[in-house]
Image 1: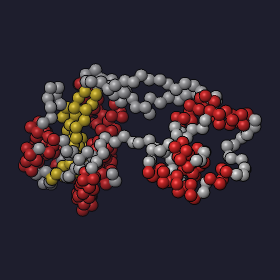
Image 2: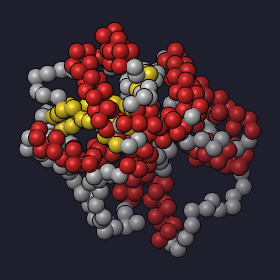
Image 3: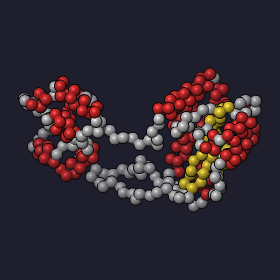
Image 4: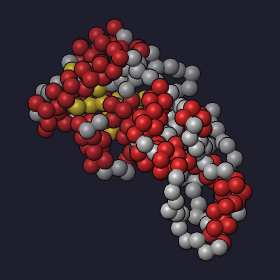
Amino acid sequence: MGKNTVQTKAWLEKCYPDSAPSKTTIKRWFTNFKSGRTNTDDAERPGRPNEVVIPENVEKTLKIIMDNRKVKLQEIADTLKLSKGSVFTIIHEYLNMKKLFSKWVPRLLTPEQKQQRVDDSRSCLGVFTQNKKEFFRRYITMDETWIHHYTPESKRQSAEWCVDGESRPKRPKIQMSARKVMASVFWDCRGIIFIDFLEHGKTINSDYYIGLLDRLKAEIALKRLHLKKKKVLFHQDNAPCHKSLKTTAKLIELGFELLPHPPYSPDLAPSDYWLFAELKKVLRGRKFRSDNDVIAETEEYFEGLEKSFFAGGIETLEKV
């Protein structure tokens, strides 16, 4: 790898924060390799190392971990009066466990909210399985998203090939631009029906949203002739302006059938997990001088997509 003992120790501590070998151990291995050793397998030796890995210690280790999932390797070793190496062997080879960092999620759901996710998903799946072809013909969804004048590249996008031993590329921490445009996108498995770009100084409240629904009805009459005598299956999230009494009354007036959507569930919204996710990938690293530039680029991006892209996003609903 071309690393010295100091660099190796830093690398191991980064990969194994709770079980990295000591500096002395690393130096010993460096000496062994320089002396001609070619593998890291333990040499045959009698005595304590094999004796401590017994069912009793395995069970005790498991109990300590189950009592405190964040317990450190050294704490287990001190409690059981074993070496860290022995505890490491028990955990990784006999219990088949490893320590993982927690994953960030937008919100932790309550049991009631989790149950609602199950109920709403089953309800939508029931409508879907009755007649898949008819579901795709009638399904229309919408959501809003902010599009910034500048969004920094992701960590993966900024990756560069480097020669072994070469310093990794550096990049300053750059925030997304304050200037941005709100886009409300209405679409189905055939493509975009229409996009509304919110003017600066305005907000999307119930009255504004009702205006968008009226426009949707008119756009459907022009662009989706097959829905002239069909009831639209309409899918939106739980934003306040979407769930208000005025909006609900408008949806009934328009004759839309509203599909249920559980709270805090962007993973069940095609706009979030599909449409906007791909749009944001394309726009990352791009800088726009004005709102008009953002709008033009967004419209050009969607116009260039194949019909199969939109169909794929809706069809994925069955699998999420």
